[in-house]
Amino acid sequence: MIKLSERLEIIANLIDENETMADIGTDHGFLPIALWERGICKKIILSDINKGPLEKASENIKATKHGIEFDLRLGNGLETILPREVSTLVIAGMGGALITEILAADLEKSKSFEKIILQPRNGQSKLRYWLLENGFNITKEELVKEGLYICEIIVAKPIYKESNENISWLGINFELPGIEMIKGNQLIREFVEKKIKTEKKIINKIISGGNKEFPLNNEKILRSEGRIIFMEKYLEKVDEKNGNHICGV
Figure 1: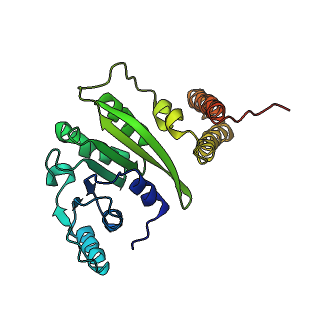
Figure 2: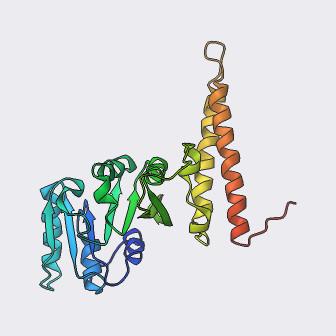
Figure 3: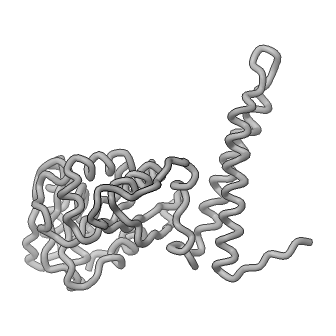
């Protein structure tokens, strides 16, 4: 049996029994193999833009010695699959901007799948904004530790209209998971505190670099201070939802 990393294990747990799935940018193919071995998915498509990953996935499939015959397809993004050909689409381990490009290349096809599971390496805020602006609902989010990093996993479903109304771009709003969806996840405080620490480093760097020739960039300091305030209030709401009451000393 294939042993998945914790990140891929969480993605696997987001796929229900008897769903069909396509893994876009499949790389080693571990996730599809595990889903087949567990009897969760009987129809699986492994797609990648490069031959190398597909050859690696093919080798891993043969190494299972189960005689599995998977559908391996070479091509760019969603070009390799038909609308509604599977119920669930997985795009994991890419940058948020690239995931957005893949989905935006054929929005009608992207919205033909019942569920899309995304795990962006970066650009999470722009990806969330794009999903909401283009007629998707974010229905679930997860955080998982991978080495030194905390990965974000986003589940989205189409809502069958051109776009959501009244969506305005405020970067910090889309950098953090929805509080209701992340309720109970023990990594959320560490995740947000790392972001706060980064903003404090930015402020200290600007202050320490200030001199007569290069005066302090107050605009950047105010931006970072505003982001810190927002995130601290976010953590207060998280504590309220989780039933944690922090008393002042």
